[in-house]
Length: 471
Ligand SMILES: [Zn+2]
Image 1 (cartoon, helix red, strand yellow):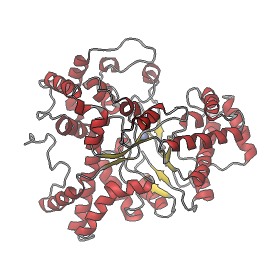
Image 2 (tube, helix red, strand yellow):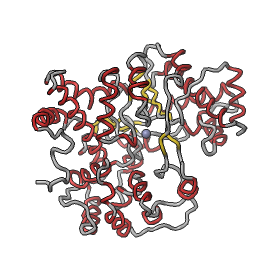
Image 3 (spheres, helix red, strand yellow):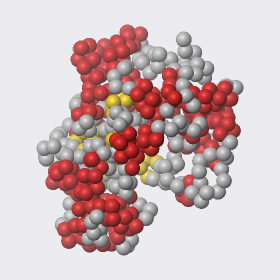
Image 4 (cartoon, helix red, strand yellow):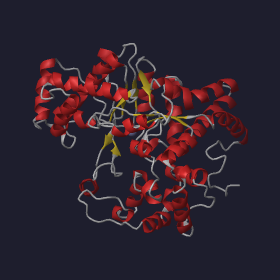
């Protein structure tokens, strides 16, 4: 039996015994469904090479910005966690020492989703049955490394054990997809697909934008010094990504702004962007125009658009200079959708076959803007709670704020959006438990029947993701 409060079998289910019983029964019907992971950031090289994961630190700490942002916030230098520096200056390399630092501060994660994910990984995936504390740190480190050396802990074996039916990774158009190619040629039947994420060639403020666009032209064999050639390169690379299973594109813009400029204005703006002469407002306008161009291409080729706006990236310039991007220094900003999406929706909002999945880091937009938009426009779906809100509380707030207007079927199921491969089952499990808790309350209040709730639970945790991502 698990220790009290360590990966407890009833975790996250409602506290009231009658509702808990309904939720438990619902959870039983979805607990073992296959995992559909249509949006995430795992490394395709793991599945291409199928080599063992190096050690506990490399796998569980170094790639997880949730972990080191919390530790950093409490004054623990990222160097001491082995996070590599941009300029190659030395950082801690003793993995056992890094693991002890993590264990000493594991108490910081109480009440956060990281704690739930980690405990699930430790217990259900790695077979540890004591909580992680400073006293168990060494035993944990040795046990995990021992497990990682076993053949059943290679990436492909774990993929199969996790019952993953499909996993999408995310690549830049500058990626040649060699790992996806290797996966395909290996004959392994795990379904790993890519996603087209064009930010490096769509955002004039992205590091190295002009060089990126030049390289983009080479890869696509198009003249990307002209607006028409640049658009043709997108069509070409999107088709290339589709050969490796891509059904979706992904757009991580600072805002949800869209635009619908005439051709002359587009050409002039593109020339400025290439010359790196854009003001911040012009860079924003270019990104806005590109969302509408991407929608136009999606109408042609059927790829689903995902829009992930509202993150102020690299808020801490010292951390950015020393460690680069994705180091836990991205902070949400207020995000407006109703006016921002209007130029795109004016052109394509009623287009049959177009599908756009909207995400937010601004929960105040859920009931006012997102649920109402998705509850009207046939092309819009709502993505699951994202990033900081990918927590039991965030998931419950999402259901409470959008269901009344958008129902269940205008949502796109769950996606884990993670770099932390071992946590994928944990993240889906949290979503399944919270959805069952939400549905159980509706059953207890006689708003929906039990059979109906069971069918909805399967939709939310399996069918809607397949439908939304055209899988
Ligand atoms: Zn993502």
